[in-house]
Image (cartoon, rainbow, N blue to C red):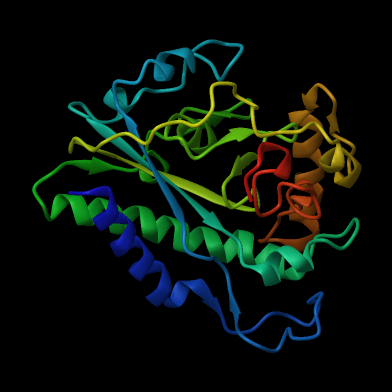
Length: 269
């Protein structure tokens, strides 16, 4: 299956899925048009990584992710490729979350309900390949998927880095050609697909270290050296208590130069 064909089918799925539309937001909505249905995601970016890429083994280093992080072939014996995608939030969701301190209702819904669509997209890609006689697996849907000490045994952001979709920021978000405000997903397949060429060599190449994300962070978990994940986690725990079952924050992904693009310093918009 060609990458262009995968992109077309995924685009059609996102465009037609009722899960991509939220009919009603609650009365705490941050914008005047809250009574109108809200679309969650724009069309995604898709990248391909080889299951044999040497970067997979480096993720097992304790100073990267750790030894529990599994390679594609550990998840799916005979794996050939990994499909990674980025689902950018719509302008409405991003604009709402530019407000200070509190998390916008639009963002909370986009983060929570949007993950239902993300899960459905993972399954859609699996079905797409299995119907063509290939094996496919999404680690995030697998019972072996775990998170210990804030580190998962399959990191969607690191997968996106291998697949050429973007690089890390100070906030540890991923900066893609469509910015940092969105969600990632991936599927491992036994089909051999042409890997996406990475346009970067450094893990944080797209980040201009402007510190805008640090200024936006409610718990002040970001500094010039990176992010304090534990401080961020504590803040999100408080959000879960306030907005349960939803939570979000991600102020570091909005009202920043990398919200919806690679910072212009790199000559890319």
